[in-house]
Image (cartoon, rainbow, N blue to C red):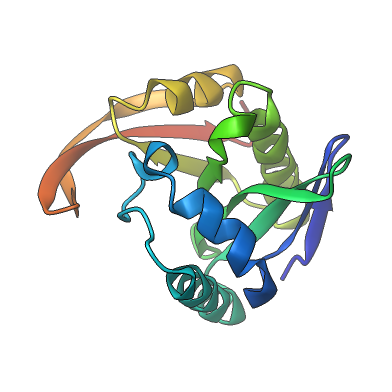
Length: 176
C-alpha cells in the first residue's frame, strides 16, 4: 500500500502513533469534528487509538490514511486518505480534515488532488466517492472545486452523535 504522497506544499505520509499529540489537537477542536462521525476528543489516548484502528484497516489493504504535513513548518495540519477501498469494483471513499487555522488556504484541495492522482494512476481505480453532511458547505465547495459531481442525498444514511443524519453523495470518475 502507498506510504507517502507529495504536493507542492504538503508531504502526505502514512499516519503513525507518534502523530497522536498533533492529531489530538486537531480532533479535539469542535469546529473540526462538527461534521465528522466522531465527537471531539478529550484525551490524547483517543487519537492514538484512532490511528491504530486506521492502521489496522491499512494492513488489510482496505483503507489508508495520511498525516498532512505542511512543508514550510513541518507541522501536521490535518489528515486525508481512503476510508474504504474496494478493488473489486475499482472504487474508494475519501475523507479529510484540516486544522481550523489552515482552513481556506487551499490545503484540502491540494491534498485531495494527490489522492485522486494516486487513485486513478497508481491504484487504477475508476470511481472516488465522498460522503458529506448537507450543512458542511466548506467541504462541498472543496469537492465542487475538484469536479466531484453531486449524486443525491442518502436520507438518514448514518447515525452520528446519536442522531440519524442525511448524507450527500459526491463522486468523481476517472473519465471526469
